Length: 146
Image (cartoon, rainbow, N blue to C red):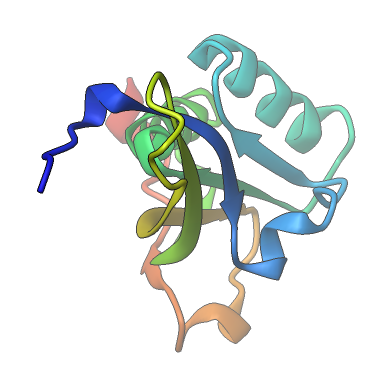
């Protein structure tokens, strides 16, 4: 029996099995991916201040969870502690298709993985409907940021 290694394969596709991720983002949703942090901060601030959204939703998954947390903290700071934060964490199933690189006798392989997801609501008002499904942080007020 011949051993095969990761070098023998390349990922050909990656699909999120959850149907939630297939919908286009809502007009108050910011999906954090591969752009730079200031871009997401600017979009979030614009939604809250210029577009007058009562709340925004920031979503990050996989390697973008940390970036999402950073964006949230910067937005809260720029809004001078006026926002309620509701945080939900979970995971989505991802199916990766791996195809052989050289040896055509190898079979393609599908790998099912769980990828972490964070969803953060930033709101000017309390959102009691999220209390049972989310961690809540009340606004800190401006004093902490002076």
